[in-house]
Figure 1 (spheres, rainbow, N blue to C red):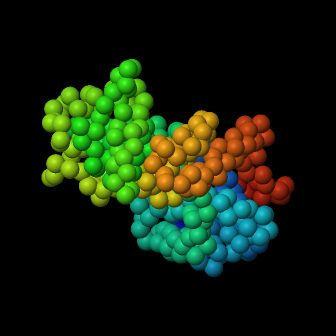
Figure 2 (figure 1 turned 90 degrees about the horizontal axis):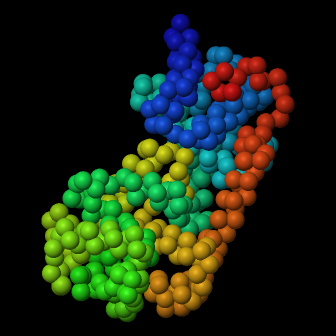
Length: 344
């Protein structure tokens, strides 16, 4: 009797996960839901093809470390999934496992911890293979999060915008004073940034960011030698304060958009990487990007040429998804009649 309750709990929670939690509670995109459904269809196909487990009697207890490890090995070795694709499948399973634990911590405990253990063992090195950057849609989300009716939220938005527009390091933002801001003939702000080795450079920021910055400065009414950005306790903002700003909004962004912000750990330096990548993708010559970033050698700047390849990869991916709609190509089996309707 107890076993039947546990089995029913798995399918019941999975159904609520797809019909209520994902589309209504956290409002994820249709593409994310489609990808997550694909993951569970693959899991059920694996159970039917490679195990003696009946999908109708599946339980959290059955989804232990050994079975889930074998499932990921099956994805990689038999279905020839890349490690990146397998990691995306892991993300879908972890999302459901986290949801299951919220509903009943005992129910999903083994399932969740098995996934975490596999993730650390199998996917821990994937992040180091490419430099993390924000996509343009992720930046739009990030900039929408600070509450501009709040003094701190208004400051946070200006910090994020100025960092992206200038490509400045976190410490350079902390050191910025009112005296370091001048304007060109079109009234766009030019920041004098003091970089590594006390070397200074001048970076012009966009008109929109200039407008934000000017509004912020008007509200603060600071003196020429005062720092532009302060913390709640100090006149000069610290790097750790900027790190906390990023940590705060990235956490919110991930919770609201589980299909995004998945490329790695988003530190303040990621914004600088993002600026460099977007400049190169926009066709700005490498030598100019070098000067904007304050690199001593152009060899340092050249690492971003590899990053811009991601734009090509993303475009190809979007083209395939739009025209071929094969985000989850499955071999023809008789398993489809066993798959729950909410996964179709």
